[in-house]
Length: 488
Ligand code: SF4
Image (cartoon, rainbow, N blue to C red; front, side, top):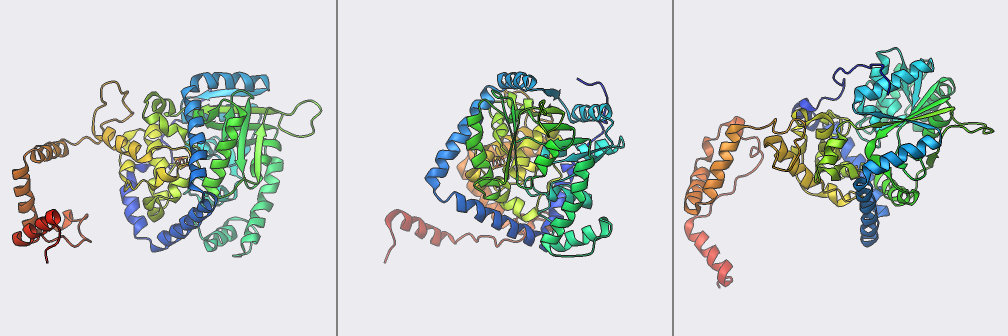
């Protein structure tokens, strides 16, 4: 492993501590709510068109879930096998425990090859380590080549969706951004023209960059293959045009055999964008071989842990690592659809973000995220690999408030939201529930004294009409009717 140090300073953009304040701002933004609502409706209907046959979906989902569970059950062995297979094909494997280690590897490789810039395909793991910022600190420019990522990079923002990074932007905003930021670019709202402008800029950059960076959707241990799913062709350019290709991904993305990729690929594309297949499916098996005309001279793979092994160590939280990053849980989440992705302040927003971020960042800064759910179950209903998201959210809520139970390893930041007043209130509540008469008396009293609640504590009920307790005579009659059926 390289000894070059990249900065280990706190991440620039990632800060879920402001989640509640961000949420308030987001729900007050009618324009944002409307644009996310319509985008989510569109993605939901595209997915639904592919999974009309519920029984077929359940069968395919069962296969996908079984593959992910099997792969995780053999994770340490598969990673060793993968390293060996990749090594035999000339791919150099690097292990990074933290974002700082991953960035140090990027920096060392950039210096070794005298690279002043890198061109990047879409990679959420590179967002996770804030590669662009870290490299910029060392004078190395990273240019995003995925159109959505390019737009958010130009705007100095983060992606708001893991599949569609610029989904929060209107075409008018993009037109303005291009006109302001790209020299000699006229304002146009013509989407094809905007795409052509981005394409013209990026085309030259592919030619000049010394290093291409990509993510990886699946890694195959047996064949030493890196599988990359994309629609724009920029992933193929990043991985074939520059002399050096550096791929980065999380350790959990490995599967044993190539036939394991196909059901997952089918689930991923249908769940993410409602496509039976994507435009490109790249399978990378090493650098350019003698006699081949194109392809990189070196291929590197950086395998990032960043808290994943902590999730892996807990038999319940391990399910989090089944994720194939399709984004369907976000598209169907009523909370995400109202507040959008930026409010979360994390690399991965929405339900998947709420369950993975506590492992990546610790529970202390992320303790509010698992509470941002109505537990309606829409996320787990559509999850193509059967992750029990609501159950994991409940466990994370518990972990934020309580010390670990015997036999469970503590999460980073476990019990950081512990509050003795709340614990005392719950103990009192439990006691009251064990004494039915007192419970009834307390409820009746509470209801009658409800008008004493100070206005600033009425957030939950402020927009509700309280139920009125029926007079005793009527209540008795209703009880009788429930027992004996209606009277004449
Ligand atoms: S949790 Fe499930 S639905 Fe959400 S991104 Fe991951 S695989 Fe897709």
